[in-house]
Length: 584
Image (cartoon, rainbow, N blue to C red; front, side):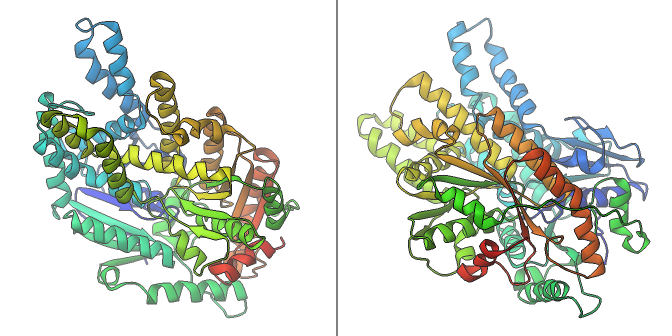
């Protein structure tokens, strides 16, 4: 077992949320730096936890890591990038155009779409302009969960193609006439990503069916983009030392079964494996232990009592009292948001309510969580491709007949822009929330960073609605007020009892409160502490959970539920009922 050994200049770590991308990218960076290389670790995740893992406050410029000579790190700060990008686009016109026109330009460059473009621009510069990273032998990208990353890696091709085919002279990147530099940059980025001598992609997964399924999807879609130099890392592999513990045996069986069912495409990739670690991967010493696990014996031993917490069933009882409305599960990737949403939706449907279970996460599998139809429960997902096509048809049907050929061509060109997807997905999100007027809508959201961008979009669109008062669907007009209405929308924050998921969820809660949305409850999922395991390694991990359970229950939430790690997978109505019936 060990870290991946790669010698390309650019390394991308990607995979499902919670599989350990940040830990592995940082541990790989440390190993390379301690072999004498100069290494830059870059986070492209809007909800980056690179600062916490490395123990250093980072910015958008390379910051040296004091404990490791030759190692540097930075975060691509999407908000700062957007501000700089907006100023770069607007400043040439200050003093030339009237103040009202300047204000209009600033508003156009203030939406979620502009934030994504700005972050993408920063990312492209690090790859397409090698001189920007010429002081480093390796640049390691710690990326956001798969769906967000696939979009990031597809954007160089998408924008390059869009600029090449556009004739109208304008785009949300700015006037096309001034984009020749960007065009060259995006073309260079595409070339670097596809060059196997320059770029490796590390597909990180757990020995878990859903994580491996997502890794396979990423491998396939990256292959379609021409990014073929891929390796697979199975992180946190656990094997029971004896057969005396039911939880340890179940975990071993489940991991072995998932690996045995791995699809041929993944099985054919070069593979590395890292072992299950019984403590947090936060700090340089812990990260070094990942590459030398046999040398790590400093496990925590302090034990204190965990609080008595209400059952998951009591949480569903409270949610049921409203009779309808929106229930949203939010949190870091990999904490079980989809499972928790499916368990709530199934239980409400089995109690006789009309329920819609949907997701804003392009990588989620809500239908697989339900497995078989449940009376009263309908399952859907917001499919970006389908929503874009629906949106294009709607716009063209409404407006195209009244336009001359040139204007229609400009409109069709605009609708081919990658930004159209953001608008289409947002409108579909608003429509799904609207269904909460007459039923329960349980929404499984994408990992934190992507969800924050979606909520930012709600703010930006609400401002646009108030400013324009134009032809805007009622569902869009009502979206932000409904999300802020505690009698209509209840946000469930999901986490694991670990440092990074709890701290990221705490930041998410603060962001929600600032947006006027008060979370309803927290759910701590997959707790080994509550599982009853007596396996030494797993029990040690359970003891490590205690301070984080206490923090959530005593400091972060007045309504908190603990779900144990379950020996039988929580899939299908019977499997999900284990969660509702569990007593901790």
